[in-house]
Image 1: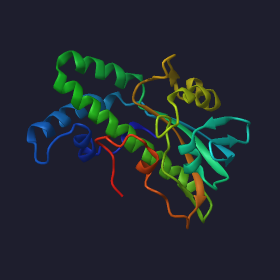
Image 2: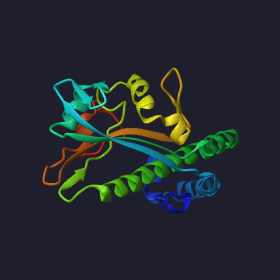
Image 3: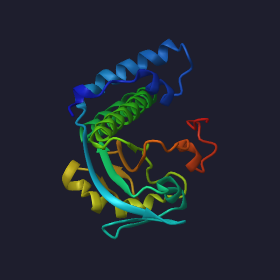
Image 4: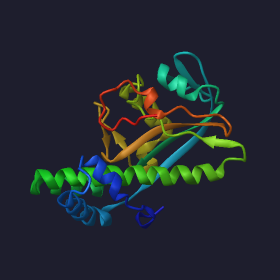
Length: 216
């Protein structure tokens, strides 16, 4: 996928920017930020498919990898396959965001909001492509990332080597489990039967005071 395939969702960027409806100044700031970022995008993703099983507290992959999380285990449920997924907008976006931060706090905030919307849209597009590869009757669940619920960010140290993120998409992990480039996503995506009703993703997260928490 090239950067031309990422459709900019301005409404989502404004939500990340915490803008009020009809705020023309915020809208203009988002437009300016997008123009500064759009040519810096270097989107890449990597994905691997595994057999899996879940018990009450863990998820086991068929390559002997184990993730410890009750919330992740509930998410995987009865699924017997899943994807490990990683995506990034690339290092040039990080550089552009740092330049914007030197200009003004407002511009930096708009840039962060735009980049957040762009990486989410890119991930959605990647998932749509993966869904097309599944046989009829199979459904790809929404992304479940380290940091959701009780799935510790430290388990990125397990996920990254399995995906070989550094070599496949240039995505690395610091000792404090921060991703570089920053505007990146890693996730598990369970493969379920199409007829199974999904729970709302925010039900798996214990951050009940999150301003972006979605209602059922």
